[in-house]
Image 1 (cartoon, helix red, strand yellow):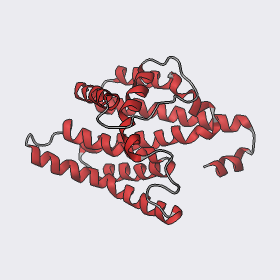
Image 2 (cartoon, rainbow, N blue to C red):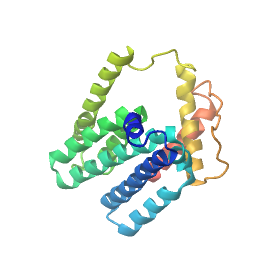
Image 3 (spheres, rainbow, N blue to C red):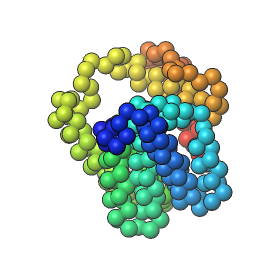
Length: 231
């Protein structure tokens, strides 16, 4: 990615910023398409895309040249989710194949794209109900998640060949247990910053939560579960 832009525009700052803006524009268009496909409401999709386009949370990845991998991953993830939704409505398997291929591209851009697996499994289980019975829905959800799991497996095999490790290529900065116990707090914190974009900073420090039995882990987790149920 960086080599291709450098080959086209060299070190010219405006060329790099233009590419970032174009990628962000593409992501905004995909937000519109995804919301319209999911809800079939043009005005809701237009409002969602407009908020996405101007939200302050995007200032750093759009303005910072080195942050381009965030909006680029967003393009791949949204495109994959869009074709997944098309598959759910029309049942054509080539839509699912396109979604899986785009998911693989998202993984090659940034590993955080793995979160799409959770979103797809959630949609399959709670929204796309082919059968009211629990077991058939669970089996079908596992099949769809497996279609996305194959690109993930290929990615991790490539990662292992490249760095010799499936997860870490260096010792983790923090222990795994406290890191996992801190995740609900971090997720809730950034959800709040998304809804109320005030007091942004280059980096929001969050102290580690030492135990999963701590209220600092349990309360944010319950809040996130409440939000998921409400949605």
